[in-house]
Length: 168
Image (cartoon, rainbow, N blue to C red; front, side, top):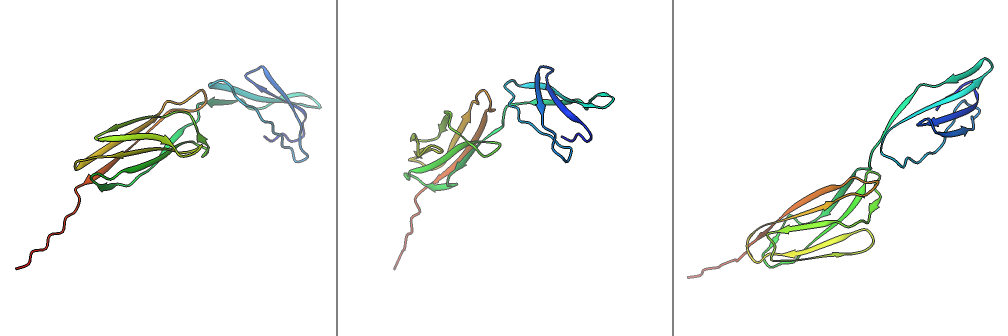
């Protein structure tokens, strides 16, 4: 924030959190605050000048949960009977990995296993015995600070190619 010709600046958050901030020589000041409640918050600053107190514009800040995304890596097709690995992870808007649990739903599979590779990635290993699509969906419910998210993928299992040579 910018506060030229002021000294002794006080920052108010929701009328109760008070920060006395240091004014830099170029007229700027800053502070760090962690919001613990979702919703709208009101911020303003007051500064003292020779003639009294000056109040800044009011800032209304809407604090929401951090959006998340589920990233999946998988082949788009394979052959019947092959095991396929779908690798995934949940990340937030800032690229940080979220290590909470995910829900995996697989339809069209003859068998599948869910596991973890390391601290960041989960895996789903799956196979089909017949030609067709396998649908896999992953959902994350979210937590106190992160929104939930959803991702899905389709993998086509094709019949094993056969090459026939006829000679006469």
